[in-house]
Length: 171
Image (cartoon, rainbow, N blue to C red; front, side, top):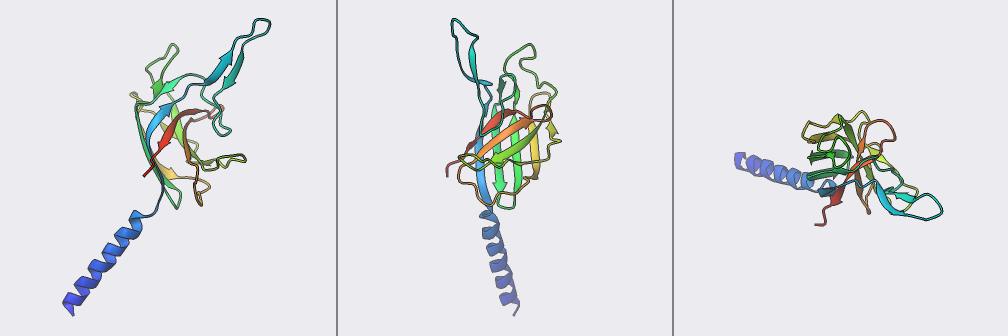
């Protein structure tokens, strides 16, 4: 009887591990910093035409930002964990600094409008002096599925523009 109980406990634990391993909705490995302007064309008789680097309806930050590393995982219940490294200004007078910014995450799963922004707490988390940050939160609303994932790291306040984007992991 004792052997049966031990074997049954082992099987239950193994089943729980396999179920827990399959609750990931999407992962991101690597990050891309923002370039606020996607393109610009000079015209002789008029002012320059500037196309902002808008991603799925979200405006970019006003300055170039760089990021050295980003890893994120979103669970099917909406729990998200993001580890970012080196999110720093890539231009302007404060180049190489964190701009005293705080950030939050937004996941957008639709490839075409209308887009639903699933975000962590907009209070955000402050960037460390070296640009490192960790978000451990729940997306609201939780995604039911995510066929075309875009993860944006956004600035708290102002226009809540995006600073960096995650690179979807394809495995």
